Length: 276
Length: 321
Image (cartoon, rainbow over all chains, first blue to last red; front, top):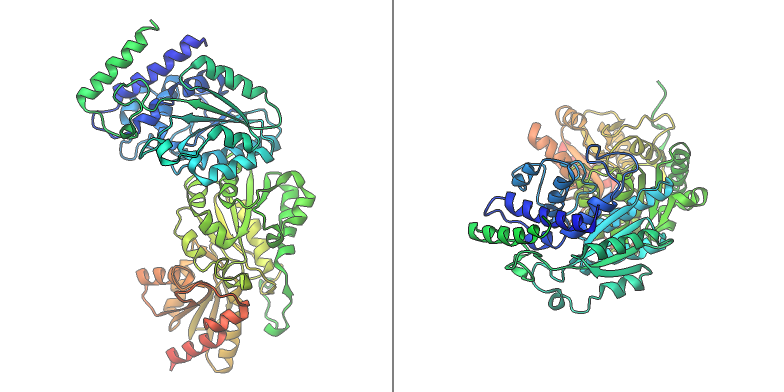
């Protein structure tokens, strides 16, 4: 899979999500749009998984610790062939397989149910420990968020991953620099994610979280690191690709009007055309 | 059929320490089942898992004073096929890590065995911050959770064995001990099955954990007063043994519950829920009132809160007058 192809998939997933989700459905648009390149790189380049056999032994594990980004994961899983894209129009439908926060017992391919923040990294550590015990080669990826880094449990987890030398665990932080209420600089000014992970003994890489080439480079490097866990702080833009959402905290979650949906699709189509 | 429980005089019973019994069964089961792993949160001296750690150093994880992380890590281990036993004080496990028990374990239906130590007043002089007055109420309300509180070390070992066989989250409530022996090696423990330790049709006493011994003392003393009490050890608080409760409601005058826990939401609540919906009868609840634990010995607190055999006797006599 080339860099261009991976880029295109991210934009295609954005397009599909906006296109298929019905007007007026409240979703976590901002934090879903910021995730797309991270997800395309994982699902189409690194994850050793089989969409036709989601429970396959020795598959890689991916946990979306920031569970509210599930719509993005659904869009990428549909691209990867886990289920038909038509399902995306049913996100959040009462009782359906694609709830706002993904649930492992509702949808094959979801490794852990998340939604209450900061638990996914710890669960990923548990999985990585199990792999070590079994001397299995599969890798655990966790996608977290900068907002989660303001939860205490995240740092309990960070310390323990270092203690157990979990080089079979890679954490990618979707650093979109916003939480629900505001810019994170205002919500929690002293947060310095890279420094804090370094202090906890992790190998830390930073990159532009929308630059596929950089993401591929950092994850490739992460997989070669021995004896310690790796955190990749991927700097992203919340609401990436939709002008009125970008860097606007009020689009943490929200409902698109018909006009907004058309505008968003137009903007994303423009980006997609570059790959024709 | 061989006897499941002792009938020897109560003051002649062996009093056995909890920690070695717990370690012994973990090691025994872990020899056969490679998936069993153990986690501690810097309270290993209280959980008693050190012998396990020595025997299986790679299968023991010292997580430090990080209960929330420990519980979620245990969930991750379980989702990858392991059978983790996560240990810390009952009070910290169920409150500091409450959301992790709910989401990482119960919501995910992860095959985690949570072991709460020094439960209720048995934490003694650690005081109110360590005394779990409401852990059973909290965990019992969580979907998919099984709650077991063994009455002695034999039942503890059988409960651990059953928890390994059972696929799903289990909360095992342990007290500091030591505990007087109630059961024999022939005891056939089954999740959800209570045991009638004393037969009687006048009144029923239902208990679990450390209070079963006191329920038996009350039963013996009532016998001398010509009152025949049915004493039931209901160590599985969830799923509760509805059959035994309704049988008691129908066949005896009233039910008295006694527990090392708040009167809100423990076995008193669970029994009331069952009879209230099916066969209303009087349920008198003995337990910690609307209070936190005191910095005092277990026995001192029992007297302070009047969680005693004497109180059972007084209530029984009043009801049967």
